[in-house]
Image 1 (tube, helix red, strand yellow):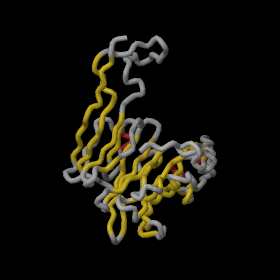
Image 2: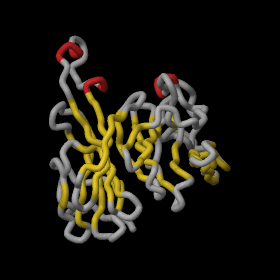
Image 3: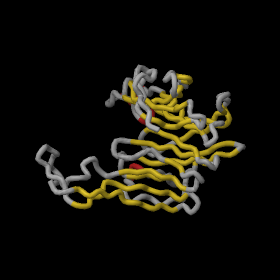
Image 4: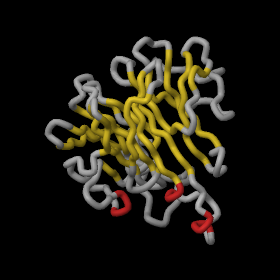
Length: 265
């Protein structure tokens, strides 16, 4: 069901722009806004919970980038941000640096909002923007984005505690650039920031998300050429992007091309 964000109560002075998660009862929804960071002034994404019918905020957690319910709505997983200004890091660059941000995964009971488990999380670069919990209840994934890259990082969830998987055993995407990689193992990075949010299959075995190399997938541009009104489109079958299907049980990945047929003219 599509949501009309018109008249939803603003969060940090901004209206929500996308859905992150829906509670199974259908009455609550986790949404995200793009707004000015209250500490740095830069652009940032923050998330909260709304009532679908009244469009009012029902919970506005502090400094939470992303959040999502588990399959039965009894728990919330969220990523909380901490910003610590480092004056020594701003001799040349005035804007906030990635090194000044740290992030924590929290798993809370719902609706009690009692903290069950937490752990620090890291990513090779960028900022976290989305989170999803497997229907199996033993795995969570968060998605990070940077200027030209994005990727997935994984957390193991247990009754005794949660922790980030340093090495998932997944193969590396052929598009993964060195900036996406980290020592000791990897999640699943890709060399593009044009990606959809990840979604688990109902049985929790598969994780699916889509991505593309370029906004201008429908045209052939020379390296130094710019897009304008006279740029011709390709004709015939064109690959718009791909869906990545991660099989968590076998730690294998399959790509499904997204192909469209462009008519002449």
